[in-house]
Every structure is written in structure tokens, then in C-alpha cells.
Figure 1 (cartoon, protein in one colour):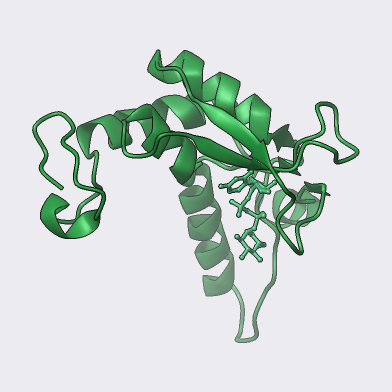
Figure 2 (cartoon, rainbow, N blue to C red; figure 1 turned 30 degrees about the horizontal axis):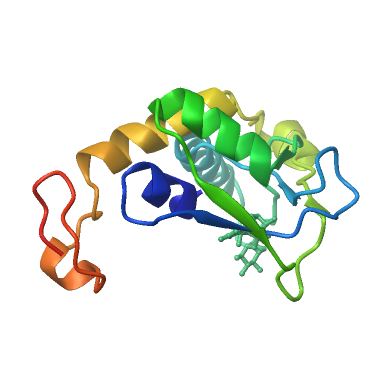
Length: 155
Ligand SMILES: O=c1ccn([C@@H]2O[C@H](COP(=O)(O)OP(=O)(O)O[C@H]3O[C@H](CO)[C@@H](O)[C@H](O)[C@H]3O)[C@@H](O)[C@H]2O)c(=O)[nH]1
């Protein structure tokens, strides 16, 4: 996702897609992406649960149970940002799995948590932040070495 955002904002020429021959609907890797607000709410639920406990620890997966491919992400981000996302397919990344999706049923059963936000909202929120902060919260002069200018930021 960060690399997709950086292409949209002009910091990267293109996204390298690590393989398109996985056993997935379009051949690219599938992951369970989560909106940062859902993740934060999940942590709050977990902390509230901990406060009811008499010590010990708990382990829960936080995710939607749904998977999106790299090219699903590219398409959704193009729609959210209105920018084309250039990409090229390169070799698989060593160690990558085709599909990784969370089972968050324990979080739902134990503290009623589940994701509320989908891919569209994730991309819209990410684009809002990235377009307002093209170089993150860092000083643009320190952040990139490729020496071109975007929206008034010198790098
Ligand atoms: O430039 C890129 C970066 C990623 N991907 C693909 O995008 C998907 C997501 O990649 P990434 O964001 O790196 O997440 P994961 O592959 O799920 O790995 C993350 O999550 C794992 C499990 O928590 C950790 O072990 C890893 O360190 C961490 O990178 C995968 O299909 C990648 O092959 C690309 O095609 N191009």
C-alpha cells in the first residue's frame, strides 16, 4: 500500500508487482488489508478486555477475513485518488505466500470486534493522508535522494 500511494503522489515511477503467477484470481498476491481505524478500535477492545482480566495475556488476530490482490489494490487506489498507478510485473519476492488472510472470529466472539471499513474507504483515507503529506511527516529534504520536485516539495 505505501508504494502504491507513492506512485500516485509522484514519488515513485511505478509499482513493482512481485509475481503474477500465484494461484489467486488474477495471479497476484492476496492479503487481508485493514483500515487503520479498524485496527485501532481492535486494540482498544483488546485493552478493555485486558482490564477485566486478573492478569495473563490474550492473543487475537485482527483482520477482515477478506483478501484483496495487489492488482485489486491498484485499481481501488486509482479510483480513490483519480491518479493512474503505473506498475510492472517482476519476479516473485522470496518467501512470499500467494494468499494470507486473517481469521478474526476469536476477536468477534471475545469482544465483539470486527472490521467496519472496506477497501474503498482504506484507499480514500490513505490517499487523503498521502496527498496532504507527500513525504510523510519527515522533512522532504532528508526523505528522498532522487532529486525531483513534487507539488512544491524539494527532495
Ligand atoms: O513493492 C511491492 C510490495 C509488496 N508487494 C506485494 O504486496 C503484498 C503485500 O506485501 P507486504 O505489504 O510486504 O505484506 P506481506 O507480504 O503480507 O508481509 C508483511 O507481513 C508479514 C506478516 O506479518 C511480515 O512477515 C512481513 O515482514 C511484512 O512485510 C504481497 O503479495 C507482496 O508480494 C508487491 O507486489 N510489490
